Amino acid sequence: MLKKLINALPKRWLVALYKHTPFQGFKNTIVAWTQPKYVVAVLGVITNDQGQVLLLNHRYRTKQPWGIPGGFLELEQPEIGFKREIEEETGLMVRIRLARALFGTKPTRIDLIYRGEVLRGTFRPNEEIAEIRFCTPGEWPDGMPGHQKQLILDVIANPSREV
Image 1 (spheres, one colour):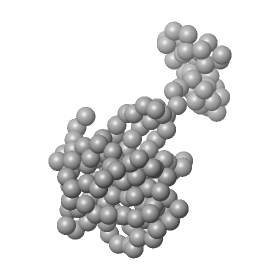
Image 2 (cartoon, rainbow, N blue to C red):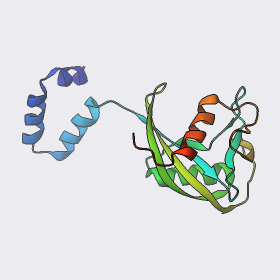
Image 3 (tube, rainbow, N blue to C red):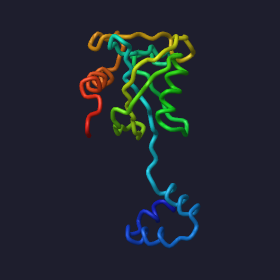
């Protein structure tokens, strides 16, 4: 109810209220209550020395188990979170750079897409990932989502596209 009330106020009133409220903690709380919430996901197109793309066989996906590495952030810097996800899921260490940010729905989210290379490590199967595979772009395993195939091709063709 408070969110609806605050969002119903004219923007100029909100700016004046924010400007003249003396307590920063209170201002931050009001901002947090009234702003939309997003999930932030980190995903990556990671390649080996031959230019093949790292794909993971996810144990919890039944219809389309293959896909690129990724996950959700745990109140951490995005680059650290993505590297953590890769290491937890595969045992691999990677070097990455941000390729693009995308807006998604279901849930409402921001997807940070990284481009990177494997530095070292050895795969260890675990409760999330049954196996990994390096694939030549276009030679995908069965059970891989079409939107991820397209994302890989797009990131490889345009590594740091302006949006």
